[in-house]
Image (cartoon, rainbow, N blue to C red; front, side):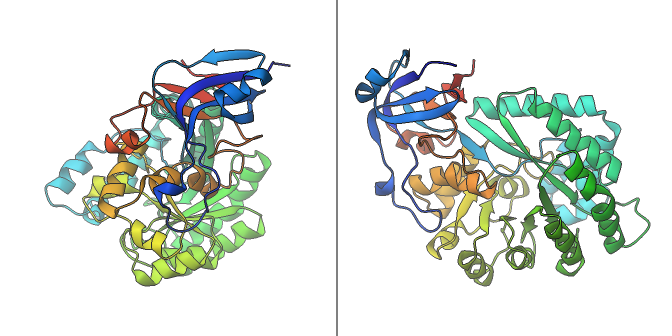
Length: 409
């Protein structure tokens, strides 16, 4: 049994507590503890407050020097970092005027990554995940979701999800896996889209449960993937087996967010094409709206209507969508800061969207804010003013990352 460890003092400590899950936030709602400290015991937070007030409770002190701003570790609620290959050619084609759908029809897009991922061994996939997760961790992301979806057969999806599970055992950060076997109908599938979904739900879902590979089922609802009508029975089976639902929704056309709300999905992600109708629908629901500004930057399209979603009373998270096609940057903080500029989001709204609101999009109650009994996942920036974090648009990086109270070198 370890002794209580006091870490600090931090010039400013932002616990990200006592703020609502839904709706707009003002910067005045951010609690800022001056000269703060965090008391850690067995990987969890035992106390938080003024550093001087906590000294008597600590057996050991891990001193922090210089000006520092501390806040919860970031949560990236939507990534595709399990993959093989590059889509640099797709990026060049888009910038020369070809559309995402044109490239996909010509053999590029998702199917190109499917081909390369199928060719890769599980060990190669694990190596790629570990390397990408390490980059995210250095940028302050202590928890990140990782999807399958580049296998598109039962065995290949299992290869991906097993790779994610094994990679999670090799790294300090936490990987939350999601099955995205409904990414698109495979080009080598001879039957209908509905028959493919039936095969996946009947053959793959039970194995996901028995091997405890994931408790999350995702689907891409779009013209290039699956219609709301096709995905309905798939989600019904997923819910009957007690899977949580999340949806790639409203990226190019609408319909996905309405399906997400009707199936009480945990989150609806993308939403670049959402109109006021979809904004109102999401705001009235308990489904978290997840903006993916990396996809907007990669595709050169408009951003998720984040300001309207918040003003309507919705819950907004921001994720990187780190993937080899539409969002290769993978820098959560940079993307969140840029979205904040274009959508006029307060610092409180941006930081909430990559901490406690993002944790909620993954149904994680033990992180995202710095509170007693929650995981001691936190990061510090070399500055005396938290406003500098978004001001530098992702160029001000964390100088220290703690996972479960342990400083990561």
